[in-house]
Structure formats: C-alpha cells, structure tokens
Image (cartoon, rainbow, N blue to C red; front, side, top):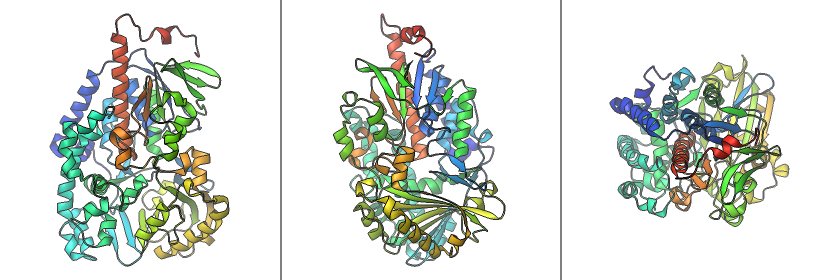
Length: 545
C-alpha cells in the first residue's frame, strides 16, 4: 500500500491536516530571516539534513561537514558486492508527517521525492513460547489476531488506541518545545499531560491495564528497543511508540531508508546548501565563551552558529572543550546511562526466504531474563532478535533469485567489557542457529555476502560512544530538561538522538525543528542588539576563514 496523493490527510489528523500544515508555513514565514548568516553543521545525518533545509529556507548560508563519503549517518543504504542492498541502521519509516511538514515548509512535497510503501502486515511477532501475531494497522483485524492467543485481551485493543491517542495529543506540545530551563518542567503543558504520562510506571506496567497475557504486552512493548531500553524499565510514556505504528503506519522507503537521506540531501543542494563529504571537523572554535566557527583540515571556517549532529558523547568529547560544557563534563559522560548495543549481520543469500515477512521479531520464551542479561552486561544465552527481509516488498534490495537478510540482536554496550574479537565467532554461530526457529534452517550454506558489526564496530566505524546504538537512555533523569539541551552553549546547538526530544527518526526531525527555531531566534536577537552587527565578522572574514 503506497501513500496516496493526499499525504497531508494521510499523516495529519483527518480534516485538520491542511490547517496544521498551514500553521507550519505561517510559523516559518514569521521567523526572523537569517539572510547572510553562516551556519556550520557537523554531520549529515537525519537531524543535520533537516536543520540545513529549514535554515537554508530562511536565507542562511549553510555548510554541512560530513566525515564520511555519503550522507545519512546510520540512516543510509549500502550496496554490497553481488548487488545486495542493506539499510545500515533504521529499516523502516514511522510517522512521516513531521518530515512531510519540513518538506512542505521548503515548498516541496515529500511524496515527490520518496516512494513510501505502507506495510500490512507491519511485522510478524513470533513468540518462542508459543503463538504469533501478524500485526496489522487494521484494528479490527489486529484484535482478531490477538484473540487467537488471548481472547480477553482482544477486547481492549480499541481502548488502548483511544487512550494513547489522547496521550499523544497531550504530549505533542512537549515534544515540540525546547527544555532550557527547570521551569519548563512545570509548564502548563507538562502539568496537563502528567496524569496520562504516569511517570513512575513502566511501559509493561502501564500495558497491564489493558492486557493480561504477557505475550500481548510484549507485542505492544518490544518497541522500547527502538530506544535501546527494556519495557520493564522504560517510562510508560513510550506506549505511544506502538500506538504510532498502528495509527500512522509502518513504511518502507523504496530503495531503502537511505533513499530518504539522499532525497533530503538533494533538496539541500537545490536550496543552496553546501555538503562537504569526506570532511571531518577537527574542533569547534571559540572566542571567549562563544563559538565562532569550526576548524576543518587546519583551516578556520567562520560561522555565526554551529549545529552538531553526531553521537552526543562522542562529539562532545572530540569537538567541544570541557570548559564549554559545564553541565556535561567528561565525568558525567562517563556515568551517563546509555542504551544497549546491537550485534548485526547483513547477509546476502542465494535463493528466496519463503514466507518470511518484511519485518519479523522473535521474542525468546524467557524474554524478561533475556533483557535482564543484557542489562547486567552479559551476552544473552537465548537471544531475541529482529530480521528484515526487504526484498519481499522491494525487488531493488537484492538481485533476482537472491535475498538480503538484515539481522539485529540486542546485546550489552561496551561497558560490559565483552571482548568481541574473541566472542564474535561463537555469537555469530549462535545467532545463525537461532534463525532456525523462524524456519531458516539452511542459511549458512546459502551465504554469498556477509558483513558483521559488533558493539566494537559501532564505536570504531561509526563513532558511536561505547557502542550504545540508541544513544543516551530515555529514563526520567535523562529526558526533557535533563537531556542535553538543543541550545548547548553560546553559538552551539545540538540535533540528533542525544538531545531533546530523543531518539528515533520522527523525533529527531522534530528536534531539528526545535533547534532551528532556537538558532533563528538567537540570530535575530543578535542582529537587533544596539551597536552590534551579527554578520560583520562573517562578511569580512577572508575566504576559507
């Protein structure tokens, strides 16, 4: 199922969608324009690309410095020898409404740039202890699926949807605003949303109000792994993750998730953004307590604002001197709570994969113990895992007569001390053996291409701090005001999963909108300050300065 011409009605809220997009255009038009300002963005991941689009629309001269030779960060799609294609990180697109609004703010339609296919079933959840659910956005059919394993719980699916719809509406204003002051935590929007957020309950605990069968609760809570967290610890707010999937759909971008990043980059270039690939930033430059540019290959590049789009802890240590991050010194980064990691296999296989769905999740028959092992820094003895069989939907993802299989296994981050050089071969064998539970009994003999990424690989190859694939944990002590702020210092701003609102593509795009508004507000305030010319330094700096 592809989204139709009416993208706004598909991803807005029914008849209010057009009005909501008009509000976005009006807000954009009302911002103080940034004509003449130089903006340096470090990293061409989803947040950096989104910020570049919005800033360029306001007349800023934007340069993105990307250390790799391609855009997208981990939201990229690679073509391996033999013609197999793999998403490196995210494998589906959720809640495209926010990105559609960003494209709309730039005078474009997302549907003209990316072909998104809505999946039904969204994924196949297999319980090793018995039973399965082919999750569908058709709520009546979803209730019928649940009824096959838990008839009493099936009656509560509609109530879950209704209450989480209200929860999302209450929480949306919170997701759309910055948290730069402790007073923001007691703002009216927060106080209004607090009763439905149930801050001292976990996702699993909140789901007990609807579903008695633990398998059904897992079907509506495994999504906390998108944040690298346990459903038994993750705050109950995040029941909205599964709600979003059923309410707004799970989508496959044709060509892989990298197609979205590439479309954003093309639109950036159309709007005059310079994207400098293979160009790492050495450090952020300061005069006094204000950032004034970046150092690139030994050259000073002047900037009126620097936007950092990278793994937070890694980028902070490497780019921002400790004196300029008093709320996040090295000692705090060392003890910050971080997500789990992932063990990855990207397999190019000869032959097809039978009835394997596009997305399949296998949940171990002792899932809670599985999670506790990971939380206790031990490799899971009987891993749960996720597999993507993208060629089922998209024939461009594998050559004819072949399949591309993406395998993700949650594992401890590098704080566990696991020696992956020693453990990887045995763990790989265990994962391949576990695939047999899904009927994939002859995988090893059919492998024609293979790539493995361990937590060490995430750190070494992709600059992921301590291999924590999903960044800082999303517990109450590291959310909202307590997360690294979007305005990180004078002239320095953050986008990406390590800042407010948090991880996940739609949330990162929303964070880019928050950050962009802060940048524009600060540029406007500096320009209006008596006796000051915001652009004097940038305008008079020598070429390449």
